Length: 108
Image 1: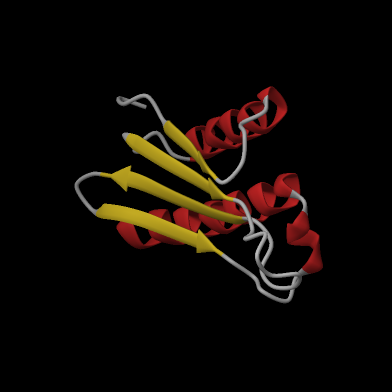
Image 2: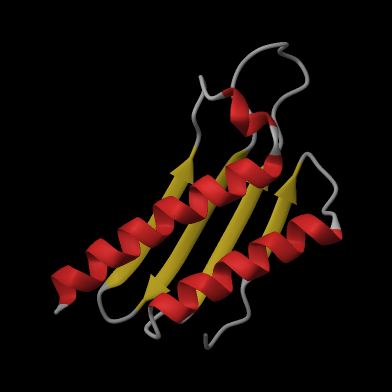
C-alpha cells in the first residue's frame, strides 16, 4: 500500500487488540489485491443514549486506481453480534473482501 492506512475510532478508546485486528484485516485485503493504494477505517461505537439499536459500525474505504474506490459501511441494526467490536470488524472486512473480489473480476 502506498499510503499508511488511516484508522479512527469514534466514541470509544482504541485498544491494542482492536487496532491489531484491523491491521491484520488490512493485510489480508492487501494479499488479495496489490492494487490497493489507500485504506481508511472508522469504527463507531453505539450510542449510549439508546438501550437498543445498532451495535458498532465499521466503515472501510479502499482506494484502487485507476478504477475508483470501494466503500463498505457496515451497520446491521438487528444483529446482536455487533455489540462486540471484533465481530463488527470481521463482518465489515469480510464484506470488503467480497466487494474487492467482485471488483477484481470485473476489472479483468
